[in-house]
Image (cartoon, rainbow, N blue to C red):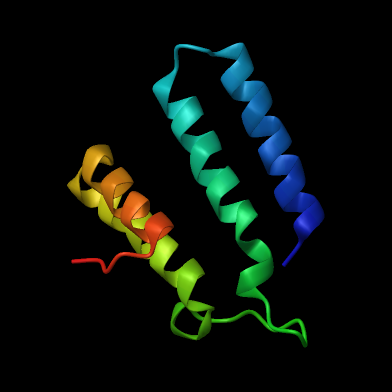
Length: 92
């Protein structure tokens, strides 16, 4: 994984959101990039190999599932699922 490239993408995303403050797509893209970048270290094993979703640590896999659920069901439901994860209650 090229972390320098990821950081540069986030920087450009922030710039884009700043230059287009009313553009929902710019802010949505930045949010997605920030979420993905925040968990990038959990997607790589100690030996540097990329880990598939089913081999990633459980909290990261659950958060990724919550984001996917929120994209499909709407932001309110996705945020509710993430809130459940934050307090450790079962999902479902």
